[in-house]
Image 1 (cartoon, rainbow, N blue to C red):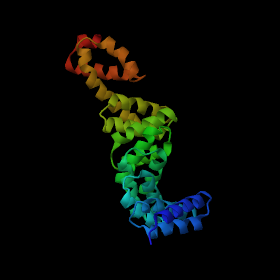
Image 2: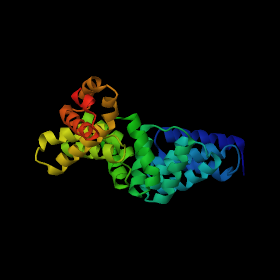
Image 3: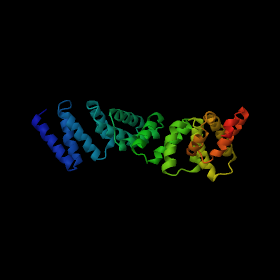
Image 4: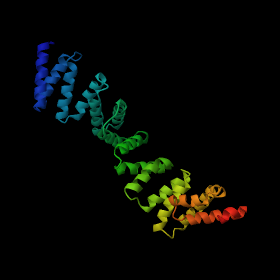
Length: 277
């Protein structure tokens, strides 16, 4: 029979035993309260006590079912929702864990630890829709965490999203002294996806310093020099040759090649005054 004084005593006894890590006795007391008053005002603290005691005993499976009941009562409790997600994950209930981490992420900003755990889960289940934004958010907060940057690069390049990969490639190249293949990737994205031949030229030339016999890159550089010559030709035709000569130092150390290409174009057009300039 329900007795308020007895329930109060059992709750107090349960809390004392929980604090003293006497989990079996705490489970007994909290369980009795929950049995006597399953829907009353004391049932929720009894449920919480039971969960904490079972977790202390390492009885994750039993705690999980009670956590689910508590979640129904308190759906916006982020701490318990996190416990639900972790318990589901530890028991191999991946779909369930995905569901709870998704709810947790929707509640509001989470700390880096939860971001990391959630991303690990969604990567394991190959849920790319969920994991890619988590990787992005994690490296936004922790710029020097390279494993997630590399995962993002691999994902974006595999899915022909070079522009999305570019910031991460540039970061690694700038901060970690990226290798020559990285420079080649950056150059290809600049010329093919970004439409920036001037930027592409810079990275191709850096690559060529260590691979002077790469005929494909030599050909690509010549093609870009021709593109830039056409792009800059109107500047020369309007009297800006000297200024352009100075400005090209920011683009390439081999500006003479671009000017020689422009000279050839001017000659074909019969623009001899500009050619002499």
